Length: 140
Ligand SMILES: [Zn+2]
Image 1 (cartoon, helix red, strand yellow):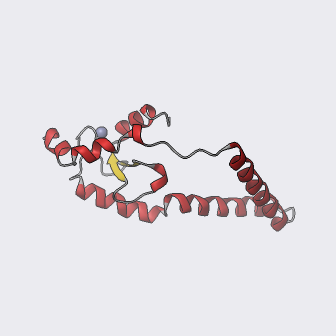
Image 2: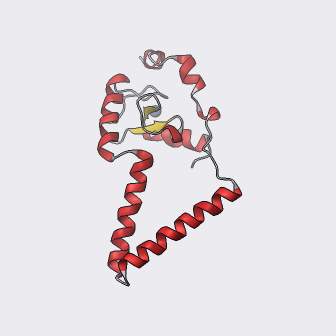
C-alpha cells in the first residue's frame, strides 16, 4: 500500500525536486544595505503615521506584516484550497512516508520556497516528515 502511494508520484520529477536542488536566494552585501534602508523607511513611515499612538503603531505594523506575508505565501484561504486539492491528488497519503495524512495538521511543503504555493511546487506531508525534511535542508 505504501509502495503504491510513492509510485503515484513521478519518481524522476520527484527526485529532481528534492532539497539539494533548491536554495533560497540570498542578498548580496549591497542588496542587504538597500533592504535595510527600505525597512528603515517603512518603520519611519509607520511611526510618522501613528503620531505617538503605540496601539496604532502596533495595528499598522501588523497590517503591513500580514500583507507582506501574503505577498510571499498567498492568503490562508488559498493555501487551504491547495491543501484540499493536494489531499485528493495524493489520495490522502504523505508524499514521503506514504502513511495516511491526518485530517487536520497535514503540512504543505514547497519544493522551492521562492516559487510559492502552487500545485506544481508543493506536496502535502505529515508533520514528522516535514520536520525531518526541513532539518535535512537546514531550515530547522
Ligand atoms: Zn510522512
